[in-house]
Image 1 (cartoon, rainbow, N blue to C red):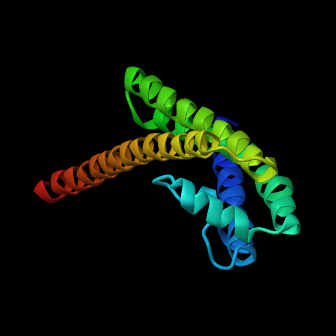
Image 2 (cartoon, one colour; image 1 turned 120 degrees about the vertical axis):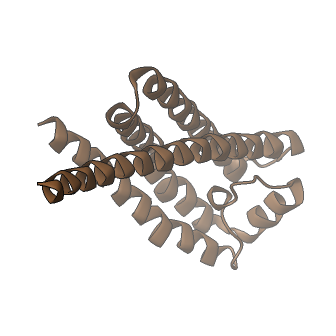
Length: 178
């Protein structure tokens, strides 16, 4: 049952991510004349870049961003944090798994803060530079923490693969020695 739940969470995470990356975010970019949405700017954005994107989004595009993209992104950070935390618990010693889980939970928190800040940018009649820069900082912090988590997951998966490979080949060597 645990294995089923793990894979259900991983598949749900992948489905929401694929929906955003293949549909909602490209649609926002198209509605903005090709400018990437805030979510696709992992290094953050300048005040000028944010103002250019906001100027390119008409009311229907802003509504789509708030109502469709942000609804999808309501689920994604939590699902990603859960998927990665469960993966870390399966692949790493408990202490490391808990530390890495704290990283992905913080990343999810920054992602939710980013979503709230971007919703404010999309709705604010009088946009301040400080509001834009705060949203950009949340984006950058989320991106850095997710990158740390993904690198850690890659290392853990490579280690698990290496162990499996060496165990399999060690067994073959014993059989060949007979």
